[in-house]
Length: 46
Image (cartoon, rainbow, N blue to C red; front, side, top):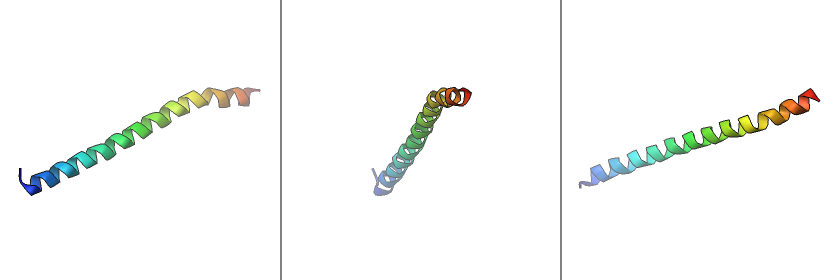
């Protein structure tokens, strides 16, 4: 393998890791919002 192909592979893997991290954070925030939403609604109803 050439040094430039190793560099491209590293950049690609790095970008994929950043993208996966963003997706995981977004999914965990959505899950947390759906879990916490009924608590706030119950407090508002009382």
